Amino acid sequence: MPMVPMNVDSSTVAVTSVISAVITFGFCATMELKPGVSLAIAIGVGIALYSFGVIPIGLLAVVGFAMVVAVLKKISGGSKPPE
Image (cartoon, rainbow, N blue to C red; front, top):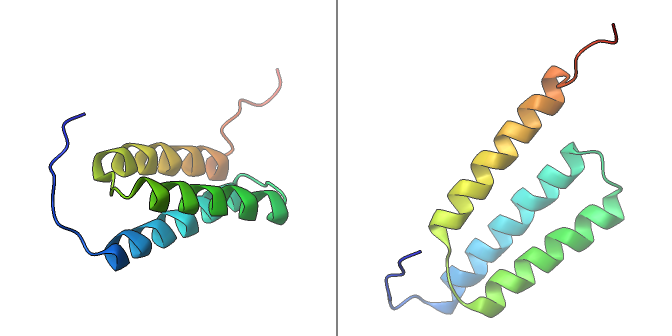
């Protein structure tokens, strides 16, 4: 994946890490994980993104699309009725 070096303030990286963690927590909660597990996963994602110090916009877009598809499948039932 190509990367473009940019001068970014550390607060920008922190904000995007927090936003990603909140989105991850919402996704985990939608997938019916326990709140403690969801929180641990979200904190791990936030810390990992902040420690990398990068804003992976392309990766976030791909993962975000996958999360939306999974949530829509979960809401719509996603499974066929037994025959």
